[in-house]
Length: 252
Length: 267
Image 1 (spheres, chains in turn green, yellow):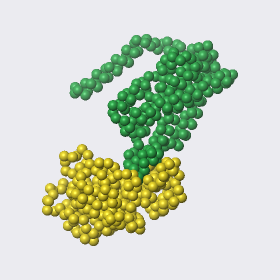
Image 2: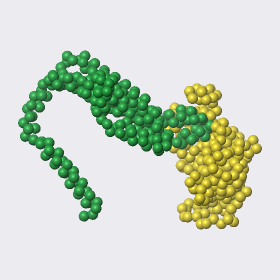
Image 3: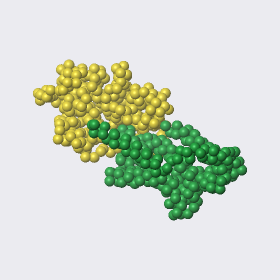
Image 4: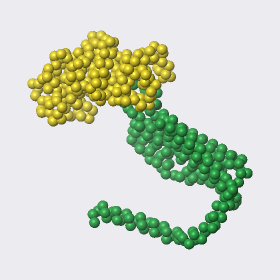
């Protein structure tokens, strides 16, 4: 066997071993899965019809989730502008942008729900820990995007305006900003959409928003109400996504 | 103005290539106000470098260079107020792709406007008149509100020329303005650049690797090869031997033989 084939064979063995280990140690019992079929059907049956009487809770929860996403995104934008500049290869030397990029990668590696749990511990229940968690978590991606927007600006038009006698402020206004603005707008809208989706579950850990009601109704066996909230969440995601697709097209 | 360009004993190495052969060496030449001059030579002959230097963009050279009677410094960039008078048409156009044609052409006016008005985009009626005259001259007035990224290569070239004319330069430098165009369009563009310069009584210098076009549109042709001046004559005086001297074998990519010092002509 050539070395390349040998390493391929070893990799296949490793993957097969990992899958087998997971199966054996979790004691997946297919018989149990099939026998619980009627129970799952009954569970889904109790979710129908969705309860219409909790409209006010749904509106309240959705509004709070929306507020968390908006303020969390705003916080992330405010932190990401300076961090994005520091993380840009064209704006700062390597000994600055490399560590900043590493920190941003570490931030991205921490799941939102974990940050939210820590924040609830730090500042208490309610939407505030949710907003802080979203702002922190989103900065990891947004600052990286902003740095890439800065680095993606073409040099030639800037030199051309300088050659025509335009001062640095005018070059920023007419050569750099027109290239950056649509990218920044598109990335921010994209991140807002992610923030909204991800903050739907924040209520589960007590960090505010509509997730609180899903958890409450499931725990108290009111599955029809849980179904209503779930439908509302799906509707909200679809509406926001449609809205964002339209917005992003404008910034292409 | 006594001279548009006055260069004496200019030598320049590209950054990082200080040990190798210079990009330009021993260049001495003078361009009179109002002349239209072609820089002729193969790729790598030093045409772009010489034009960028006259535009005040290069540092670290040796010799004396004076543009529109302002001496250039090899250590620091020229003042923006001096750069306004030199218009540059870039080979790759260097336009702001997402902005409109009108915005790109008005960008040529920025150096001539008061800073605050320029920043907020308050262009005076006079500024707009200059920009629109430049656009009609370049034949793109009907494209004014189109975005540059929706234009063809030939249209972009015209936007770049209009931006340069809107700048109202006393010296127009054009780097390979027709290298990407088919022959009919190349004639139009060179006619436009040299015609606009002559109508304004300003100096134009363009680089090209096509001898026929250079001789047709320039009053004077300067031949470069390997960063050295090979000839400098009126367009009518350029001989086939001159052309052979800068190209060795026209249309061939064969490596050039070592140059004989006796062939060097410095005027």
